Image (cartoon, rainbow, N blue to C red):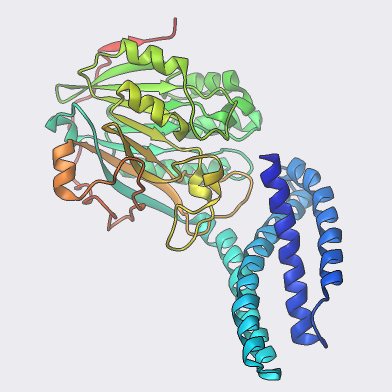
Length: 435
């Protein structure tokens, strides 16, 4: 990961030099020479490398230092994106003008196309930080699950993840999210980790708002790596004291859905190996040995890297987060985003060995206060049989990617109907705890 960070800083510096080169070509007598460009990259990279540790230590601060650190981060992202686009412009437009020997006309075309590219690159980041970061989308998705009963089809599951309650998600904004989740009237609410973001001072106020979540069959959660960094025991204690959320710490329960059993299991993130693309867990092995094989199971695991292991063990459905969908993604190829560095599965539906994984884009943000082509997500899920799922749409092959759904036009599944949930409440018929 350190190597990736270093390469990224170098690319940012190169992007800044390309912007300077375009400005010199457009408004000066000529562009930068190769020696000048090399010197510029060296100086800017030295500056960026020296500033980076300070920015990382101040990103969750308040006041002027927060503004400066976030401005540098957003500017760096804009320089990286614009630099990549400018490089293409120089190759296509500049190269074509040179081959055609267009002279001043080619230089004019390069100036205009470069200007549009700058507006697109920096404008996109500005939009993502001001508008995109506030967009919240409810995605309605059907998920195929083995051993599922038609009675489970009446259950709607609200899945949220990666809230990162802290400087980037404060209690007033969190209250709006909780109200929106409650308005969906889901039968079950699940949270797959990273409720908090480093600062334990937000735990009490955050839990007070989370305690307002309501669902007939309960609210379940697991902890993610950022909860570990915040203090796993402090977060768990706040949840226990301030909410009715059932926190699964390598545990499982069996709930009743209109007379049909459904297992809800959860594994706690250790906080280590957060960049692993594939992970295994001894807790998963133990849970799989305890859960009856004939029961449908819903596994909450913060990181999608556990999916391959969970699929081998026979879990029906796995719900995860962690990736944030990259927060920044290409307009059409959404799965090409920065989170591919830490996960094979970045957003949407995945299949393997008859098991289904759904990776949410998350409801919060971490690091960058930016979302571009990747709105915040509340997923409203419905479990369905494999046959019913296949009848509605062709399923993706194992490990294939399904596009994210929109509020009123799911990409691969029909919208969940608006029928209300059954009036009965579930009773936990079995509880299993570690040890």
